[in-house]
Image (cartoon, rainbow over all chains, first blue to last red):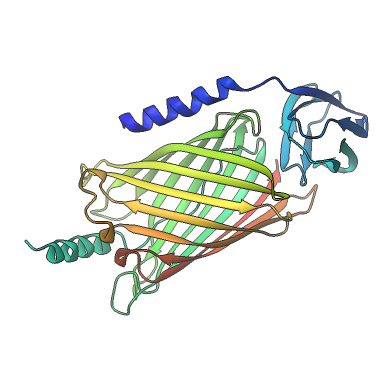
Length: 106
Length: 253
């Protein structure tokens, strides 16, 4: 039991050393992403702020980025992605798959 | 008592007490908020005819929901059968997964797992199982994204017929995320019934083997996820091998 507590304490201490990240923003408005294409630097971790300006919940999802996150109506969530190789990564709203966009890492 | 006799007695005790893992799977540290999920797990073990692990089966069916962005709860029914025996509903389990960090935010993704399993069999104790879930995403490893997940769980009997033993289970899965439909990987599982009297390694259950995992999205009508693995027993107490599978359908609700 003591060893489990020590392992947990060690693991939780590691995150405190997290470095500053690049930030980027997306907004879901009228059931589309704004902007539909977002350019971010390659090779860096990105702190992506996704705001839902609509009155219905949405879900930011990307298979290539291995991320999915529900965004309640009127709320904002943070999704951490990368570091990314240079390229284009598609994302969509899982509740409304017609809403799609790309993150381009350069 | 000779070493060989001690090993034989320990093996007999382990085999009699645990014909198979009730639930052989790697837990993830993330919670699917507002998602309703139906999950089925299966495990069949292969061993020498006449031994308890010969064609032993274990199945779980569960329904779960992401109540909060950091908390998912799951109600599960467990069925099990030793070699040559009929399947019996042996436990009803309440599982909780707590997401402690946002994926990718820190060096590790962390979660915590806690379950209470109510035995339905007379003379068989209920138990609690809990412990950390540790995950590391390693991207761009020779051009490939990889995902590594480790479960370190302790278990303890509770209620009538409880023993004083503290069990330890580990599960490790490493996946190469080649494509959403199919990702190959490797898994390790281990089970020590009582860490205070772990006995020789030969008396413990340890497995290793390949796994395939993937998901098919039917957005906005949900997602079907699967895993199938073949495991080789690493010790005499593990039997020759085992097949395990997991099917999960999730939909936002």
